[in-house]
Image (cartoon, rainbow over all chains, first blue to last red; front, side, top):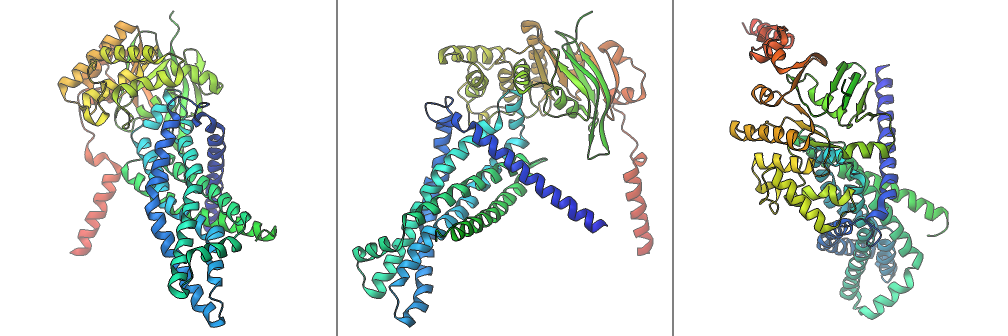
Length: 266
Length: 270
């Protein structure tokens, strides 16, 4: 009976978590126009710009290095099999399609989750501990509008941009491999890449990246809002933010890939 | 008879189904008075304060602020009520990325349509009122503990509320700075005719500023009276609190259990 009770309590807890996340998502979406330039409240857009710099610009070097490494790994692994059939050229398809559809959005989401998801959680968690969130509420200010919405807008703009850059770095790394192994020129390589990827691959990848940005921001912020107690709770919340958002990103990736596959888009 | 500005009726708060933190609390706070809420650690002071400022929903009972039941009103009405209640938190709760004057101007910029020059003047006046006229450009980490609390007060009075709530204003301050903050509380009461609720366990400070005092013990209010009556109150828990008498350590059940465990372990070792 105890085991069933524990299981039931766990399931209810998870449903409550998803419910809270959904509620926060809709609240965030509702107040998003207040962060937009011209239409929004004064000062809010500047906050979003600062967030864009933190989420996007600061993450670019790490994304670049990781994407280049992943591009080379993919090319090397692919080449090891394909050269046995004399089909080394298809490494280009593997890298280009692999990055635009899958690796670009996923790698970017993992990096952003580790860097920014944990930072969101730590920032809001600290604000909870020091009563800053309570202070906002007592001043009749909405913490979702004030704290979450600028992050959400910034992530929705910057994560797709980072995904595009990740794709570029990964594909360029593939070009390096093809030049070294087959002496293929960059012009020929780019022509092959253009032939192998379709616009829907790129758009599908960007759609995924927007969904991943939504997950990372809302899980990070939610974990921050759930902080109670002292500074050690902030540490726990940052770990939970990264673990949960990475897990949910992979689940969402599976969902999107399955939908695209069933819809005949891949 | 004066209509109370804050009225708490039969307020009960139960956490996790069985942990009763507040038990049928009734409290009226009259206009332009300073009411000090006293009580030991874990007595429910902070919980009562969080319900009075509308940060939590009670299990039962109601809280009326300026005549509005804050737990059963629309979000818009609650927003209007909150604009008339300023809160100065224990740790000041200033936003670290904003300067002192940006912290004070925040509610004005967010909740009013005032032009920037008007806001700047209002911010200077509020900072000057709490003695921080020259500290507007400083960031919170550049302020001392006392200055942070003053800055928090300036932000709390930015929208000219008629109610001001202080959570442990003297905590972490030396006696001189604490006395200065007490003076500030009295100044605000007289200058702006504010109603002030102070939650504290600092007895000296409480007697300095209070018109009336309330004492909370294990979630129940056991006294609400003027400070002279409170000083002479014969209730054993109030006497213990005012005379600073500790609970005898061996009367604590958890300590007794721990001691029993230790003596058992000693027996095994022998």
